[in-house]
Length: 73
Image (cartoon, rainbow, N blue to C red):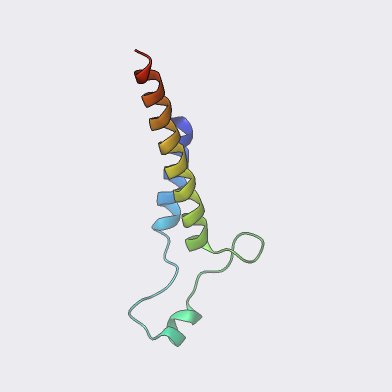
């Protein structure tokens, strides 16, 4: 459960970071994109996808573990 909380905390942190401006035209918005933070390739939006996917995986594993223990009772 602690791992689940950690993943979601990081996912929420990266989700609220602005990565583009949807009001501007695509060319103008591209100029204001956030810089890459991992291996000079992934930006904050990509990291948000990784963290939220990890959190969903851990959540499914927690539910599976709880259901597995309940089925033996």
